[in-house]
Image (cartoon, rainbow over all chains, first blue to last red; front, side, top):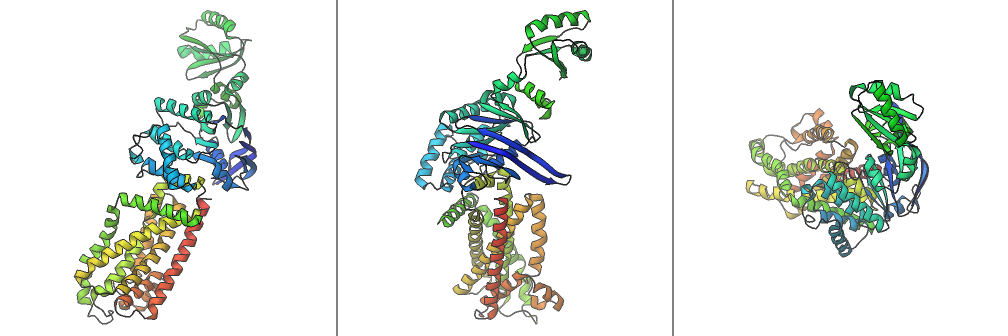
Amino acid sequence: MIETHGLRRTFKSRQGDVEAVAGVDLKVEKGEIFGFLGPNGAGKTTNLRMLATLLPPSGGEATVAGADLLKEPAKVRERIGYVSQVGSSAPEVPGRTELVMQGRLYGMSKHEAQARAQELLTSLELEDCGDRITKTYSGGQKRRLDIGIGLMHLPGLLFLDEPTTGLDPQSRARMWDEVRRLRENGTTVFLTTHYLEEADALCDRLAIIDHGKIVTEGTPDELKRQVAGDVITVGVGEQHEAALALLSHQPYVREASVEEGELRLYVDRGETAMPQLLRLLDGAGIELATIALSRPSLDDVFLRQTGRSLREAA
Amino acid sequence: MKLLRDTWLMFQRYLEILLRNPAWVVIGVLQPVMYLVLFAPLLKSMAATPGFPPGGAYNVFVPGLLIQLGLFGASGVGFGLIAELRAGVIERFRVTPVTRFALLLGRALRDILTLVVQGLILLLLSIPFGLQTSIAGVVVLLALVALIGLGMASIAYACALWLRSEDAYAPLVFSVSLPLLLLSGVLLPLQLAPAWLRNIAALNPLSYAVQAGRDLFNGHSGDPDVLKGLVIMAVLAVVGIWVGSRAFSRAVA
């Protein structure tokens, strides 16, 4: 559905050229939910905007929905839907009117556009507010309308830029269901997010992007498997520096770091490392407040690839 | 034809948005009405001054007032575009196959319609004050206003697309439209101006529209100045559309 080679975009600034996207190769298959995960400013949106014909690339090439991005942008536009981060509806216009307008711009007759708008209002559960102006919508309703606008012409590929940023947890869960339903209907979804949970729960495959480059890509499970072993999180109050000094030299600890006042240890086998840790800390007189064993998260993947935590970078 | 269809769709959209708040049409007329009521009476006693054009105070002042309406009405249209840029509406249109030119033309046509309606309201209100005119004079004057609207609105949209912020756009509008107004002879005829001021005013295209409007309303419809005004405004409109569509197709590649 999407294939890019060496896609680049440079912006000019007073400090010189800034490479927002620095050579991206990627492949997205038909019917999957593909995600770009990365902190703000990583180049996610720039990349998406290039693929959606909004921004000319500085270099590289891409095929989007079967058409050459550089040579046939008009064909690309006919086949994709795009939902931007900031929204897409005018505050003074009713949702239904926006949907019909969108359909008309894709060449639908008035009748076709009205029928399709009704269909989308029903499926997105916006019937109650469809005839109200969008200024009165809740965050979740507005976002669903944005998606409806993007889907009006039945595109095979939908770009979603940060679809759940700013939504409350309930609306977010609702949005995830909506995106999954798109996949069931055969629509390919390309989304960006800086939420780990979102990438983990929603994406079939994802690429982690930082400083304009893809640092790694794969299914969420594949990525987490890169971080071999388990993570043990230890809460030791004020004594974490002492604990770090003590534990980071143990042979079974691959990596250790302090994050948000907690000690984070990467070990090969958590179940055997735990008792040894407990003994050591006890022997050194360091009082243990909490201890937890977990499988690595996408944040651990990000940390491993970039040396920073995504939570900090974002 | 796709351009016509897209333009019509855009025109309908923006007309509908305007009709949701028709108060704006009235507010736009309010300022010229104030000039009509609170300023024009001052001209009555001046009409006898040597150099003041013939035809009576209102027949001299009202045509200029309509040109002023066109200038001010069209130069403020960028605010709406900036709001739409911020709401993501323009970006949404950019991803559709819509003809880029229609994004400009549809809006500008809505602006022209607004100006023509406002101009008619203003003319009707002027009649009780003593304005005397003919249908032909009104039609040609409104055509002048429409051309100004098309040219100025297109340029205003281009500025909005370049600046993308009300904070930058507002001062630009004020600092450009005020000298254009003062140098057009709307408030007081340029015939009263010293030669140097008249020479500067000659560089202002709007001064020709004002002159043409006055000729139209004072029984000189056949005067070459009328044709000259129309041609200059047509050129302004063409240049405006060119600038505007370039700005749109660049921002909206």
